Image (cartoon, rainbow, N blue to C red; front, side, top):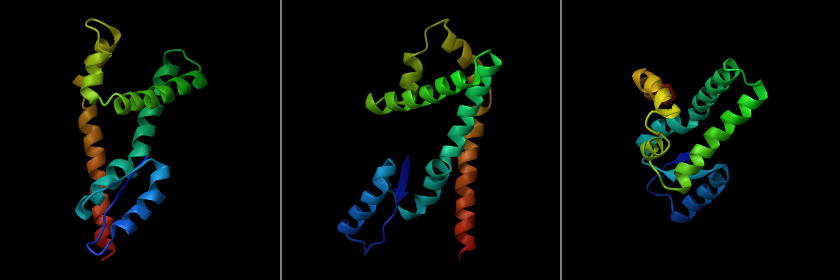
Length: 143
């Protein structure tokens, strides 16, 4: 998991380190300018629900293709976790990993043809933007 934090000018480095120490067990705590906190909320605060939605879709596809629900679930979870670990540990961009696992004429390329001709990327981008927008709206409601 990931969290974002912003600090006012009067916050000391010691104070910041205490906050990081509290947030760090959840994953990573990144300091961002205050005006970016709504984007952090949309991306990583709401993000687990969006990633879970994608995982659920993978599970449904596996079941539709004949896998048992438990097997499809385990494969989907490990696929997402393993992909995140590869990107992080190998310091790869998502595009680099996509190209690494895409053999010409292979199964990945065949699947990518469907994925890349769809509007799924725009849908995901717009989902995160809408969550960030709603975070800004909620912040305005508090004023």
